[in-house]
Image (cartoon, rainbow, N blue to C red; front, side, top):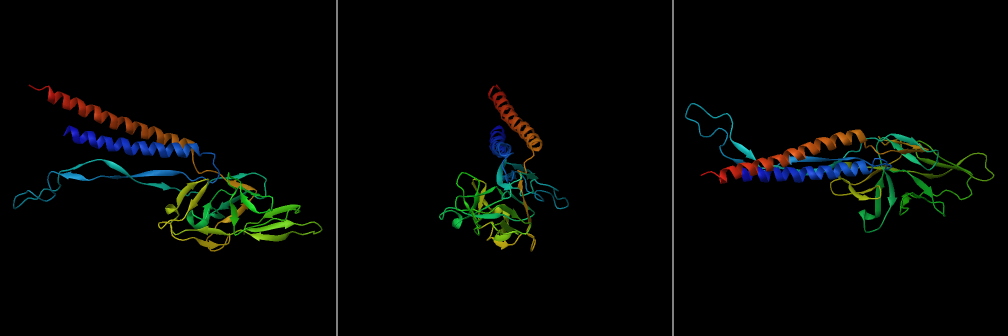
Length: 267
């Protein structure tokens, strides 16, 4: 019996160690624009049956419950939670936040995700050619592409995704591009690839394209960025709870060892 409890506690330590890794990543990205927190989900393992439910009774009585001993726990999945982050005002026209459903799409490497990545991080800048690109280490280009004339004197993005620019000699702004949004049947099935990007998988389904503010898609908020949806206090509370559970499973191993030692010393 002592060995079963030891192995069961080990599964608990392994699962809780993974949960601590998830919490650590959430806290590390508390200031990452557009980051979505994750949580570890658990499921119990197989059971050893020492008496089946409804078996072993006499002709008139049936035992109401069996005798099943669980063998521990494992991580079933790590779920990304796409709740809305708070908007942060930046004063930059090409900083964009999505209010509601949807992702921006950018062109990435052809051999990754079919060449497309999806992000909620709307920190875009114009490169030397005027193309809007992600303000990250690779500068992936927004898709469909939006090019801002290099001689534009003023730029604005409306809530429906229209990119407007005031050109020299013009009194009114001209539309120079249109930002599209994308959503998925199961956004939780998207795969993280780092750099604030997700790619499609068989679980996520194919992307559905639409204009901001139409057909259930979110609207665009210019001059703002979406903050991480990580709440530091919540993560710290989860960390404390996980640490205590880890200590309890460690205690089970110690107690099982003491029981085996007692049995070994019996004469």
